[in-house]
Image 1 (cartoon, one colour):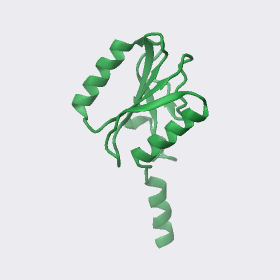
Image 2 (tube, helix red, strand yellow):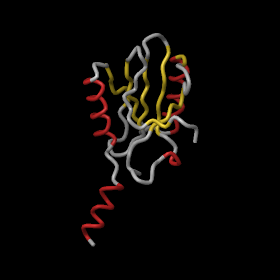
Image 3 (tube, one colour):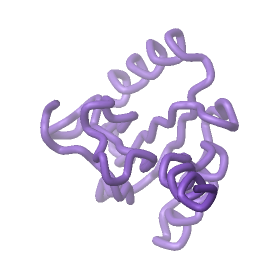
Image 4 (spheres, one colour):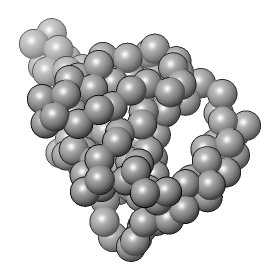
Length: 131
């Protein structure tokens, strides 16, 4: 019984935001891309937003995917969706305006900025379909 409960708990536990961010920054560094924490959120479970800056005044903003996007087989994985510039890049001012609204809604969020001319995010779990 205890072994089964332990398996269920491990399956449902989510990696702390601070640890996930550290691993993501490392992933970007390994790929040779600069990434930095612009805003440090709640260490335990702060929402994470990834701003990909294309260094030409445009970018893409990824944020947490809606709950409906989560897979029942892996409910603890972090999933992302493009919240600004779903199909194409958008102006940096529009991304910053959205981030300002998100901060007013949730002051404990994380903002990570990635600088990559190709617009790569290095996110493994991006939801591309509208939910």
